[in-house]
Length: 182
Ligand code: IMP
Ligand code: MG
Image (tube, rainbow, N blue to C red; front, side, top):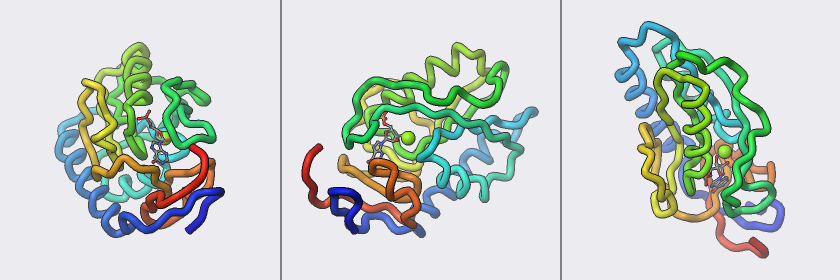
């Protein structure tokens, strides 16, 4: 499949992704079973929306949704290291038990920036659930609480992940095979 100037091939099926997401949901259900307040799911736009939707189908604890938009990539396929907030969290984080939902953790720059920001906003507790992790790239000391699947250090699209805004609606994860530029 070709998106813009890059060719992709199937990498992880939707069924495999969904099995991994169910396992993340089960761990969250166990860990937050004793929570007295609803957990605030802070969903990173736009990539984590499909992950969030699928995860919620298997969450049995009370949750609220909030959204945040950070950008590190722009129209490129490599992380710039500069994180900007395009949309600040759409709910107060003060005193909340927050779980950040990410589509993929790559360098970890986004998670580190979000972690600092969310702590400053006075969250009571903070964890991250990411659908995918590129362990070869992640070099931060912050723990990653819930990881769906570990993936290669290659550019991926599908299941919410985009290449310059396209490919998010692909049902499954596709991996870059060849391309020009970037
Ligand atoms: P990090 O800040 O380097 O950890 O990058 C995290 C963000 O970069 C993710 O939320 C994605 O939006 C984007 N990203 C990282 N790797 C990929 C990829 O392979 N395909 C599409 N987006 C990616
Ligand atoms: Mg993202």
